[in-house]
Image (cartoon, rainbow, N blue to C red; front, top):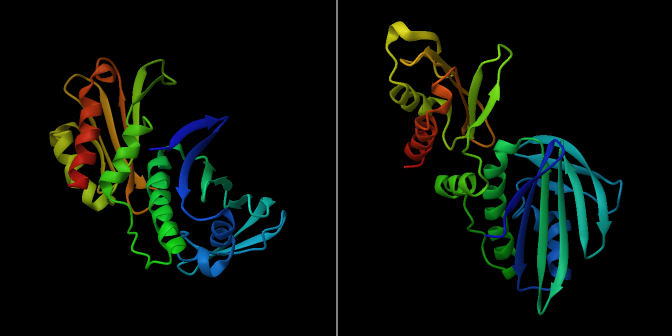
Length: 257
C-alpha cells in the first residue's frame, strides 16, 4: 500500500497515492464539480476552485464551512475541512494520471479511520471515472485494523506521571460502539467486584490489579462509528507487562469478528 503517516509538529499527515487510467482533466472535474464530487467524496461540497473561496459542506444535513487554500487548475487543489487540510495533486502518467493526496489533522489515533475511509472513497472515485455504478462500501473492520498495525498505532506509550510513577497508555480507535465493546472489556479485565475503584457502564472501568497496578479502561467518542479506547496502567510492574497490549489487540480482534 502507498499509505504513509508522519508527524509535522503537533499535526499528523496521511499520505496516499492512486493511479487512474484517465487523463488529469477528467479527474480534475471529478475533484471540483459538485455533482461528480458528491458521488465519491464523504460529503457534498460546493466551491469555486479559487484560492480564498469558501467551501460549503453538507454531510447528512450537517452543514459546515471550509476554505480553498491552493488551486492550480488541472493540477492542485487544497481546502480546509474544519481543522483538517485536504490536498489533491495530479500528475500526468502515460495515458492516465497519478493522484497524490495528503490529509493533515490533529487526531493521530483516528488515522486508521481516515485512511480506510479514503481508500474506499478512491475506489468509488475510480468507479465514477469509469462511468460505472458506485458500489464501494464503508471500510471493513479488518481494513481499518490493518492500518492500525501498518501505522504503528497499537503500541503503548510509557511516561512518568505527576507523582513520579511510570505509566503506560494505549489509545485505539475501535470498530464498534462502546455498548458492544463493554462486555469484552469487562471479560478482559477479569476484576473482582471488591477491587473496582470506578465503574460507569459503558464508559469507564477502573480497578486495582493483583500486582498493585492501577488500571483504567475508558470508552469515549471516537472517529467514525466506533468508540475510542484509552487504557492506562500505572505503577510497577504493570507498566512493563506485555499482556496489556495483548488485551487491547484481543478486544479489537473480537470486535471485528
